[in-house]
Length: 373
Image 1 (cartoon, rainbow, N blue to C red):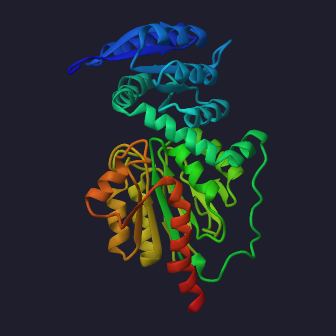
Image 2: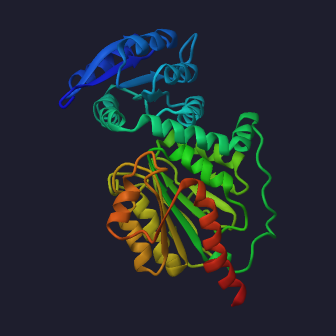
Image 3: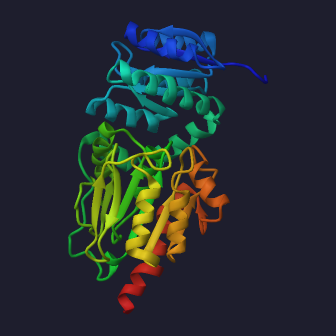
């Protein structure tokens, strides 16, 4: 019904947090808090009875925790669930599990009252509005399909083991003179997990911006490293770019590439947000294009907003090539849509075909060219 309010159920075991979330949402036009719950079991029953549009779900609760509550809620009915996570390593790990299981997005609990307005009054409201308009059934179906395809990766993550990494000798000459730059946001953690778990050496250095808070990027890198044949780390200032390595931009900082082909290093620095984000895809892609020129492959994937659109333009202007994730397999056809509509994506790909297309491109344009020089 046109003009209908977004019905939100707030779930948190902290009475103070329930009140803070509720107060901020009540002041947002078009949003109605239809109920609050203090534990997972109560939340599942209220979803069945109230049929909210969106649920904000605490992760760490006594009894039925957020993960089990998420699974039970999705069994009752397809519902947009936004996880509300603590800023801890454990909270980050559980949040990433929840995203793979079908949660639409997440916010981190504010560290203090001053941060509450930005997190609960702006970020959470924005994500609720998106979640209310999302095709929840399609997103949950895609997440489950990704989880099935990457089940060995999930097993590695659960067991705490890591996929064996290649020997340093498995680095073809010349491949170090190329670079892959990936930009991704909402829906990114499960999509990036699926992509990197399917890639195999040899690969050029891969640099990634995933919009994510500072406390989340290191656990996310550990998680990706466990499921990938490539070595995945959180990027550090002055890290040398190496083949078969993936560098995740640390949350709260920009990451760029500096130097020359073959000896390039990361530059991690503070600064104002660019395209509304820090780290910014535009910053990373522009720097990669400046250093590697036509030997740059850009990959723009699921996410809200337009960060990366200018970066894709910069890569193509330097003679590089850009792949864009398609609408059907994106949780949010936003960043990748803008780049595509503006004419800065050379070819689109379905997520399950992404690793194959990247590998083919590396072999045809990067590897074969390096071997024939």
